[in-house]
Image 1 (tube, rainbow over the protein chains, first blue to last red):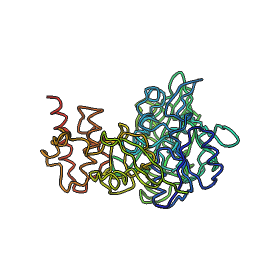
Image 2: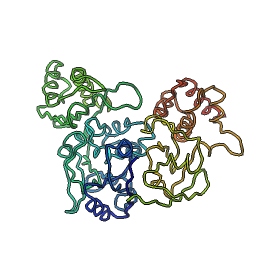
Image 3: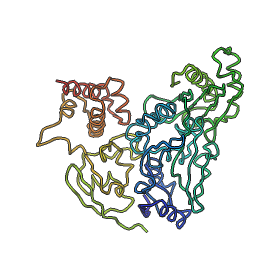
Image 4: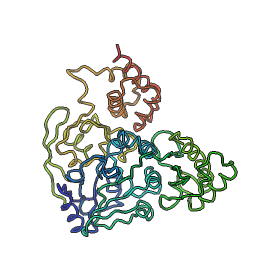
Length: 285
Length: 158
């Protein structure tokens, strides 16, 4: 592995200064489950790694305020999965976070890291899209709040500037949790990356939101406000053709995990399954 | 650019001080600097679990943790389980059930199983499979490994 410097700031302002000073040769480090692999294989060669885990403002934790749950940037997926408020309000995100790697990875990997890595197959991305997450980022110009749908640009690419870092992910809490479900297809049981993943939410007004993973250059969101998908009485043919129409937003490719054709077929199957789970309130597709 | 850092950590209840460069992994620190070679180096990408150790009470892949990140931490490795030469119930169960073939994955399997039983003293077979999903066994001793974890859990109950 190449050499790099290691910085361990205590305050957020110091971390931002370090990123700005060394831009573009600095990389923030949270759990390291993606970053360390890329340091080892040489695809990333930063001069400085800025460890966020000692920063007072970013201490691990999930806090509730002003109708939002605020998940700090160093909160690991294992803690997100165990949090009762998350389980009550965002069960589909909990399901997705619970299938990221095995325990050893979930004990280290963070939600912020999962989205900053910007894999099109990131498990937590479809539920974050569906639940209208906001990404809170801090840079030299201050703090900004980015809707998650505007955050992902492409494989490994986000809207973050090289001297910005994510400080938290915010989720709006509703009085009555929206019904949602998450499902994914993998090559094998146990720890694996998603071949296709889908998250669906159905709210009381009939609005349906579908998050797609691993079927495009970035995680994608489709919405249907017609009420057709949310209605359990809709006939299957109508439902299927509407789901197929929404899936046109996707552009799956062939890779080591599956062919384009297989992904396209399975996307529709999985969408139907997860929609059904969301409508009848089963939680998991 | 890459200066060394003096880190202090506790490994198997013994305080240690080690000088490391940032690219030094926790796995390297344990094996090369402290001579604790029970923790195995295998895939080095966080897939196989052979390097599993407990870091501040949580199991992690030590191949994905920079040694500098473990400054101030409490680490337990496979060498820290037996006391006065007596194996833990779980370790004994691995022997009794023949859950060890080549043995390379065993330290990681035991560390993961220990963590599972600490959180869930009476796991079902499905829960054992899920709890050990991050630990691969190339000899495919999975049936015996699951039997060993079940036996250790049952033993605990007595």
